[in-house]
Image (cartoon, rainbow, N blue to C red; front, side, top):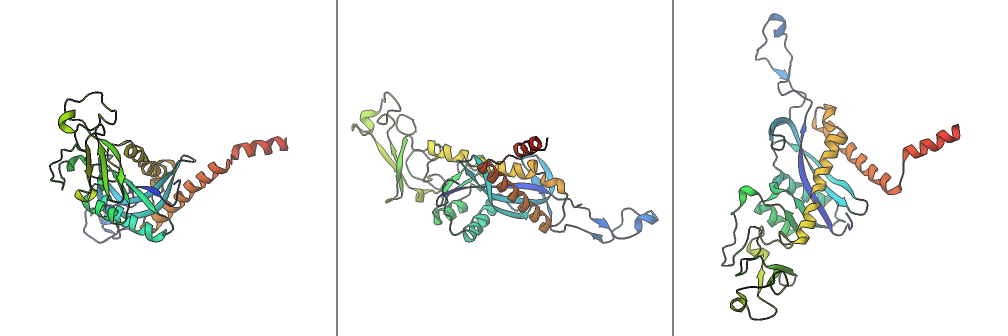
Length: 304
């Protein structure tokens, strides 16, 4: 969050178990008469929750999906949640991201989202198309189950990251993004000094500048991203995506969100908001250098 005019926002969902029972609570007196498996109406304290498979813990859970947008402040090395939304457990992260980004842009028009960082759950063409329409650079991991699903059908040889491969079989070197023509420039690895020799130099290009390739995002928004996959800039940005996971960890582990055993979406939303405020307060204390124990020690010395 170094520049509010060019935010890099990471999105990620997390599973939140509700305190309600999926079986409900009996309202009849059948158990007093020895009938324990009756079909009488039951009362459900949280009727909006659903079952969902938690792929991370490899188990089913009964509750909600929390989808949060977060940013990483490199100045104070702190992760901050900037958008909170509690959704049905069955809601897929790829869908939640679209809703979250749309609402975030509407809530905070003074901010400009420059990059969106997400895991492979966000790897779908609809998300890339929307981000392109909003002029947001996608930093999204490719889904291993979706490899080979590409719209590009040209003659250029590419690797799995959409990087052109030269005749020597080596990935070409990224040499910038040309905004005026909306295309990515790639240069010869020999001419860029990445390799010492090339057996195809004369066949490829006798020029000292070397062979140059161009790829356009419009050919395939998923493969030809403005910040090329696998590049140093891509790796640097992708590291920031873990801020969303760390924010989720703070909600669930540091503040023990699920131990509240709350029931009802309003109560869960309130607790998520309170924990988010605490995370921001922690960041403020970090900036101002406030240390409660030091102040307490000073007062104890004065009292003595």
